[in-house]
Image (cartoon, rainbow, N blue to C red; front, side, top):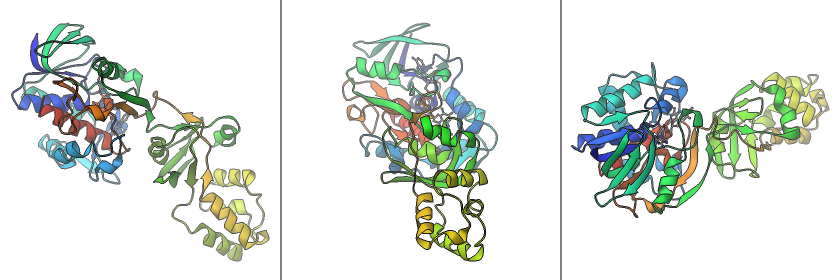
Length: 392
Ligand code: FDA
């Protein structure tokens, strides 16, 4: 079988690329070893797919080359994807911080992409594993479970390593190496953090307890959002966001009261409620069980009138700068994304084409471009898919 463009991976990036290539009149085939296309889209955003973010800029992406994503993101914007969603009459809403979700189901986004593929003449074959790839004079010979496919252009959209149970493999990285590309070390991103030993024992029984707004900090990077105690550690959006910037050994700090003048508030409580114990006072600002635990661990709980002003200042400072000693992450099993991947030094930022092998492209999560939580990763998939689809 011969096609102009063969795309490996029927995820967000691969389907978008096939649509763009098909619309240019190129014959395009997408193959995926999974039994249905777009499995990660289906499970995304709690089943409602946070398909983009109104505030996308290159600053919300991690990449060894911070300039790499600029061109593709500028040429296919959130407005372009929203126009597609509206064309298919898919109802959506902004949840918070520019995050756009489907009103009904992620299934509608997959349906939309498949309908666009069909309209552009691009074919999608599932349950079709790719076994090996070899370069030929005209392009590439790709050995699949359904026989050999010859393609002028080969687009690798096989994603990262997160959620192996959904079909994630390291295939794209192996292919990149086969063709001489550098692959930067990978690790789990947007992932819960784990605690161990005494640090785990201290907070384990708080599992399920949620704080609506904290600020997590690693170095100069900071995120303000919710935090959730889990059985093995901590999660919630503020933790998932900072996890992409944290590595074992890094100093992680948490401001438990980011919107408060904690010191001023505690001094005022000392004057107005002198007989009340600190743990009960703190329970006005923090969940009661956490307030109690922090008092057990950090400050003994006494009636407010027994604290000197300097002691209250020290308590406030500690609440705003809690050093949380994480031991690791939950890993690829639960990570939303994979950091690292195909080094962008070897790719054209405008087309995603390999600088080493003409006709070879890498798009989506397999590339060393990783977005924040909040629709940024799909926007990268759409934008890099479009960029390659315009060129392949
Ligand atoms: P993706 O992983 O989607 O697709 C790769 C495809 O390649 C898969 O279908 C796989 O089966 C196939 N494949 C792999 N190896 C192969 C091989 N050897 N042969 C053939 N096929 C192969 N992002 C966001 O912006 N908003 C959100 O709401 C969410 N929510 C979310 C929830 C959860 C639980 C996860 C795990 C992730 C998210 N994400 C997200 C991240 C987002 O899903 C992710 O960034 C994109 O799906 C990446 O798109 P790709 O097309 O690059 O890879």
